[in-house]
Image (cartoon, rainbow, N blue to C red; front, side):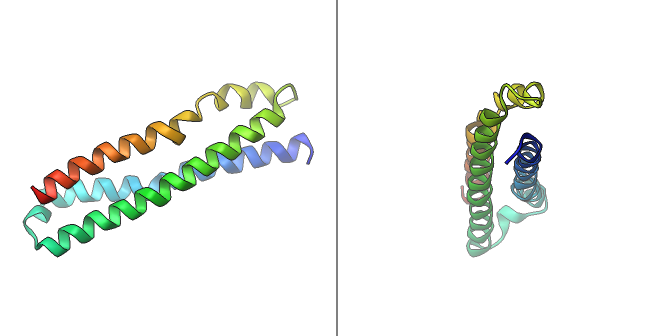
Length: 119
């Protein structure tokens, strides 16, 4: 694989990171909005289902983010020292954010929603 193809792979991994954050973010925002319209007063089964949907989406999103960030890190290592090095290496230092920080933030928000929906 030449450096141009590796750079395309880097861009694809970054796109996967961005897209993988859309569904969990939309679901979290929607759940907060639905709390304003009475989600917390619905039956227990509905509240547990809502939490299950959030949890499943969050887990899948975190897996894709971790995998894409890891792939991007490997590609960045391959591209270091080459013609795309300046564009890739600097950004690659921030890949810990989608690997670790973003899932941690999701967990905190999820726990806040568990409290709001069940207690």
